[in-house]
Image 1 (cartoon, rainbow over the protein chains, first blue to last red):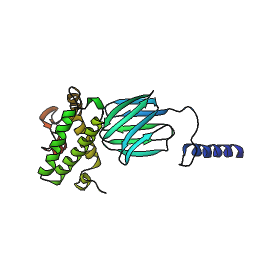
Image 2: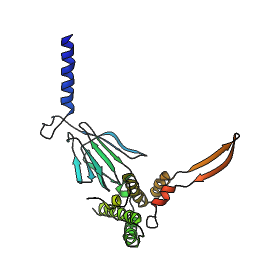
Image 3: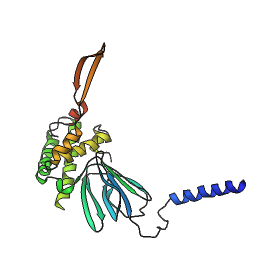
Image 4: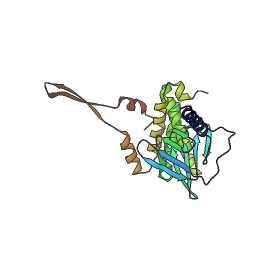
Length: 163
Length: 73
């Protein structure tokens, strides 16, 4: 009786230990691939795909995630998500959302994600100048803020297309 | 640092949707039309009396229209 309790207690303890990973812990060795899910509310661009690396635009800066990355949650800002698998790069533009990096997988949830080549360079340029002029002509704080967001989003799309 | 949209009283949800809207509008055709049509929705409000529809009105996207200022076409 006591033995069984002790075993189940120990098992619980080990489980907790496995699930937790700190900055100083050693990375488990092995042939590792990153399990990635990348989705918008209307589509799944990757579902439990095995990839080598994913780079996404976190609010604090670009973030590259390799297998066994330290768990984290990051807010996305408008920018390019690069999925690297089998030596090939796949680029998407995301508007906003969140990325969840857990021990065994990474989930990127974006409000809108489009292939970079689907963006229209001229429309981006046009939108940028429209938003820039709208900042000055905005009558209230809200429409000014929306124009400001527009400038940021279009600038991000522009630099994404130029790189 | 507080972002400007936050200071202006926009919520994160609205900010995220505005960002997404700008991206959709910068798409090439036909993806643009396709993406934009996904975001529109319609609602109708019907009042029933004695088992019949007495009054039916279409509800416009109030919040959506407020989002889209003249600058944000």
